[in-house]
Image (tube, rainbow, N blue to C red; front, top):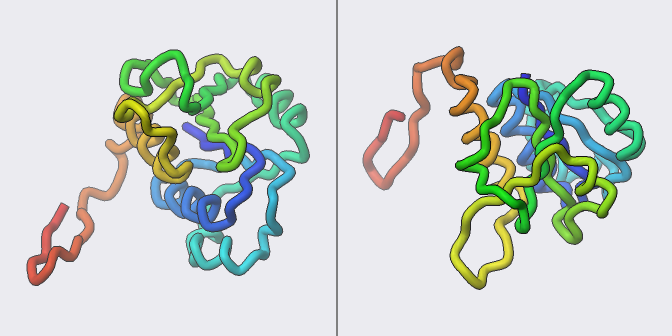
Amino acid sequence: MLRLALYQPDIPQNAGTMIRMAACLGIAVDIVEPAAFDVSDRHFRRSGMDYLERAAVTRHDSFAAFDAWRKAANRRLILVETDGALSHLDFAFAPDDILMVGRESAGVLPNVYDAADAVVHIPMQAGLRSLNVALAAAMVTGEALRQIGGFAHRDNGGSAVENGNDRIRS
């Protein structure tokens, strides 16, 4: 199963949003400590809502502990960074990959970058710095799931989206 790793997250609302997304998509989450907030933080709980209890979250005390665990599990680490060598659209994802996003304020440390099996980026307009980390995680996770057929087993009932007075079924 595809996994999403949050490297030392520092904004609780973003972490809660990514965990909510992972719960909805059936993806496990790894939090690489230290986080800059307590998981009981009200902002974290508010953004994750009741989805936090439905998410499969594993906490790792350090990057070294996380890296040892993922190597023992024989999983590739795919880092999502603004300076990644390859577009996420051109990368071939595998079902056992771990997608990692860095800290909102500082990305990842050089040893984390060096440990990655691949570093991908999201193509953007020239001169713009970066996307919100939760948006970046959603985009890359969506592409990885599309490639590996991860949406095939999902409920096809669709979800209603409000658009003014119209209801659109997707």
